[in-house]
Image 1 (cartoon, rainbow, N blue to C red):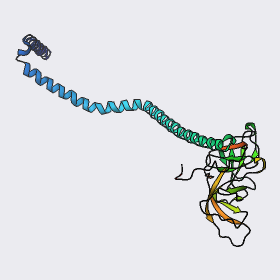
Image 2 (cartoon, rainbow, N blue to C red):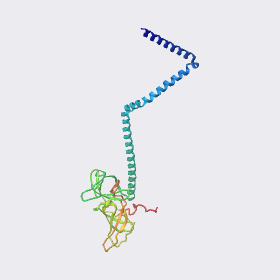
Image 3 (cartoon, helix red, strand yellow):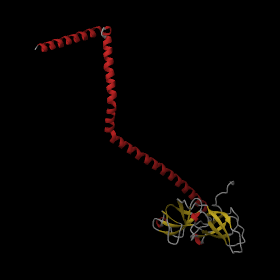
Image 4 (cartoon, rainbow, N blue to C red):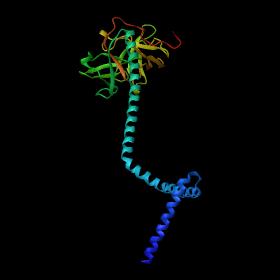
Length: 292
């Protein structure tokens, strides 16, 4: 009982003392004699609070990261998908710009030669029984395409149609060993035959019908044309002579020409559905360097 009374007495004294200190501190304001004690207390408790926050902050940060992880993963996935789409759009715009330029060049060549063409895209490169160099284009009989029609692009002669379906057609390239087209030298009226030799379309073999006719490196060739323009229309640029074999008593003279059209990287082509009213001769040949 005595201990209980003593404890109550001490507690009462402490409470009374605290009340007196608070009253004096409040009434005296900035002039309070307890100001240093209050500042010390603030420093002690503030330091303890900062230390506690430093200890707790990593824990709370980890908890927040765990809580937001699914959302972050979704954001990352969304950004990756958007980046992939933007890259795809950029690539598509570059392809469209390239095809647009090729189409413009092809139509320009057709206009110079007086050829009526149906534009088409090369959609596949595939073999066919009896042929090695064959491509498929996305134009067919529904577009007016028929077998034995000339195919060209913005650089020159590509080949001829060997089969036409309703929506697609098969084109035999000039580089195929089984391909042959009448050709004429730019200067004069000398004619011969151009054959494919394979080798991925790098060179074409040109055989002049008259072995006595001189042919030199740099000579340009154009298509001689077929009867009624099928399978080849006249005046389409074929290539430029790079090698000449010496005549050895043969009835023909042989040269090798590099085709103007890159037969290994075809994209936009044109199928000539109507031949020109007259032979354009050399009008479609590209200008030589250094000339206007």
